[in-house]
Image 1 (cartoon, one colour):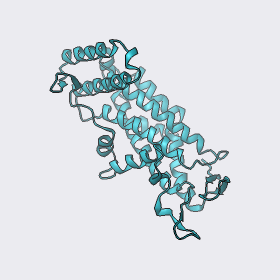
Image 2: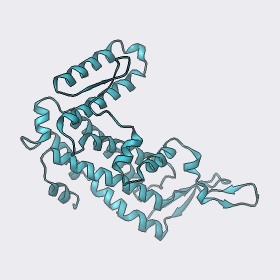
Image 3: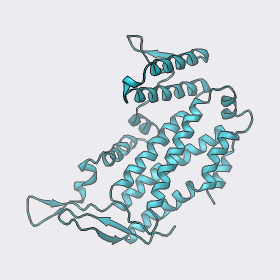
Image 4: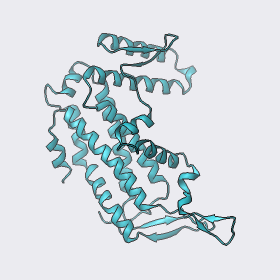
Length: 288
C-alpha cells in the first residue's frame, strides 16, 4: 500500500488548513501497519467469518450451539467482528493517497474497532466451557436490553421485563446461574460481564490495557489532554502561552492501530477455530 500522502495541521494561531507530507519516520512507522490492515480486511479474509458462521464444520462448537439454539455468544461475537471490520475499513479508506490523514478522528475509529473486538474476544475465550460461554452471551443480551430501556423507556412497555424473564428461563434450562442483587433484581448470568476497562486489561498486553483504552477514549470524547498533549508543546513569543501542534502523531497512531489489529487478528482466529477451521486457514488467508 503506497503512503505517498499528506497529513493535515491546524496550528493554534492559524486557522488555515495546511498540508505536510509524511516524513520518512512517519512512513516507516505507518507502512507496515497499513499493509497489515489491508490484508486483515480483504474481502477474502472477512468472508471466512461468514463461512464459519453459516458453514461450520459439523460437530464443532458453532455448529453444535446453532443446532441447539444456544449460539448467543457466537452470534454476538460475529456482530462485534463485523462492526470492528467496518471501522477498520473506514480507517483503510482514510489511508488512501487521495485523502488527507485526519488529525483526531482516526483514534476514534480505532476505539470503535477495538471495543467491538474486545467484546467478541471475551465471548470467544477458548479457555471457557460452553455453559460459561452461553452465560456471557446472555449477559451481553441483558446489557443490550438495559441500554435499550434507557432510550424512551415509556415507549418500551413490558418489553424489558418480558425479555429478561426469557433470558432467565433460558439460563435455568441450561445450567447457567442467575445473579441477583439484594432486592432480587437480575443483574447478570454466570460469571458476569466485565467493564470495557477490565476487558482491555485482560486481553491487551500486561500493564497497558487500561492506559490504551483511556487514551483512545480521550480522543473519542474530544478531551484536550488527548488532542493537545503537552509533551508536544513549544514556547511562543508570549511566555504565558505555549503552542501545541495538532497534526497527527503518526508513529503513535501506527502503534495504537497495530495493537487493535493484533487483537482483531487473534479474535478472528478464535472465531474460525470455534467453527472448526484449522489455524492454517486463517494464516494462509492473511498472506493474500
